[in-house]
Length: 158
Picture 1 (cartoon, rainbow, N blue to C red):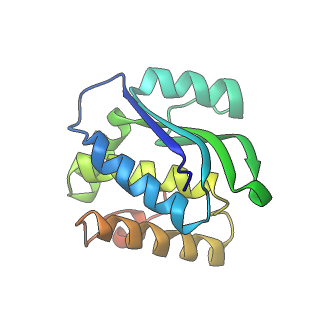
Picture 2 (picture 1 turned 45 degrees about the vertical axis):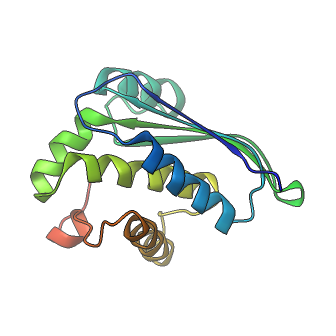
Picture 3 (picture 1 turned 90 degrees about the vertical axis):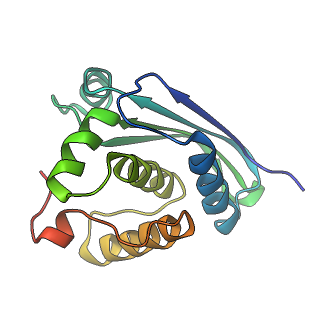
């Protein structure tokens, strides 16, 4: 059986990042969504790099936590090619706010980005609830049972 390739690069090492753990979660998400071919790349960067990408591709002049770029998708062929970029600096900052580990925050960003690639959205309230449930489901598979975040603190992200 075919399996999509997962490639992970860490250009910034401020936060411990278990690439194999992340790759296992990515493969699980892709399998659950019926993706059998393609490649998903994940890159860990610092705020300056993600800021540049956010400005270039989305017109937002600020760093962000995660960006997801779908390059090619063909559900009939079970194909997905995409890229997820996550910021370890943002993970460090937000982890302090949420009183949990930056490593868990960074893994949350990876899961969030891959969920975007496979078609989940978080703009409408019902979609956001579904996406948060999926995040919790996949992080639980990695042994992370409690997810901290703006919903848990009663505040919204910018």
